Each structure stands twice: as C-alpha cells, then as structure tokens.
Length: 238
Image (cartoon, rainbow, N blue to C red; front, side, top):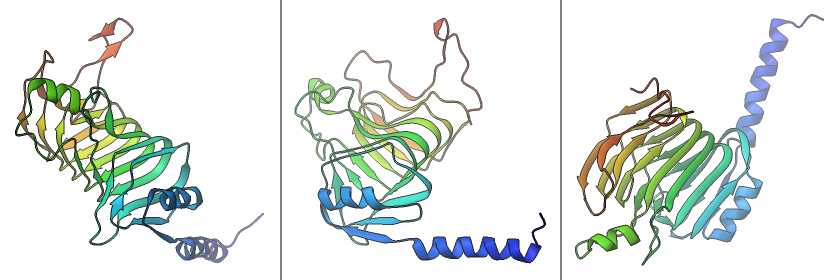
C-alpha cells in the first residue's frame, strides 16, 4: 500500500488541529469541582484554580497522552493540605500552595508526592508553618514533614519554594530535572538524590536545623544493592 507524502502531511496537520481544538480549560473553585474536572480532562487540557482551600488531593491511576495542567488562575491563591499523584502520567502542577498543618504526627508525611511518568511541579510554594519563631526541637519533629518526594521516570521539579520541612526534595526517580528550587528551614536533608540519570542545577539550600539524630546534609545520596545500603550504584548524577 502506498501513501502519498501529501496525504501523510495532511493527516499529521489534521491530528494537531484536532488536538488544538479539543484542548479545554476547566475553571474550578472548590475540591468537588476540581475532582469532577480531573475525572473528565484529557491530554492538553488545563484546570485553573480560583482562590480557595482545596484540602488533600489524590490523583491515582490517571494516565494521559500529553500534559494536563493544574494551575492557579491568574492572581488566585489556591491552597492544598497535601497532593499525592500516584501511578499517573503527563500531569503538571503549577503555582499552587501546599500547606500541611500538624500539631503532631508530621514525621514521615509528604506535602507533595510525585509517583509516575512525565510529571512536573513548578512555581509551587510548600511549607508546614508560616511562623517557626517559637518552635522547639520537638515541635520540628512533630509538625514538619517532607516536602517533595519523587518516584518513577521523567519527572521535573523546578522553581519551587520548599520551607519548614524535614527532607526538602527526595528524588528516587530516573531521568529527572531538579532545578531552581529554594529549600529553606529544613531539619533533615535539603535534597536527597537517590535515582539514576538526574540533573540538579541552580538550587539554593539554606538554614538547616539540627533537632534530632539524623545526619543532616544539604545534598545527600546513597546506593542500595543486594547487600543493603552502600552496595549498589547510583549513576549519572549531574
């Protein structure tokens, strides 16, 4: 079967035109509307968040063929308590606040979890408290959990502010970019680079608080092999 070059070009152009026409924007103002939008989006769509508190968000098992963007609407302040994106592909999170608040039990919790393929978080603001002036060591342990946790492949985390946390960014994914982030006021490690094929650039890590027996580092990496910690290889880290 022969296919003419003109016919092939027409098919490609038609596909992209259909994709362009199909892309939609969902404007939402609360967590119920947000969940309805997530249930109905397709690759190329955008969900714009008006100002408000969107509580805890979980997106699980939703795989797109191109990026779906969840972003704060222009001039809006969209606040989450936590975001968990699990077993998903092609989701981008932009310009939101994630502000977990604990009086106890924060140790081991994650403000933002990215687990899947082709995931991005950019220009987000994450913190466990707006005021730590009166905090004791025990307050740090009980009220400050982890910032961003990454697992999977092809994940980008850039230009985020991560503050008042245990570990700032923990990257166990492969083929990743961690760029332009500020990690400030942390009690554990600023960045943990545990996955292969990762690029770390232009990140600022400052203000470490020594409040427990963790070996605190600005940047920490280790391997895990068949014989346990330190027996494997972490490779291609820049």
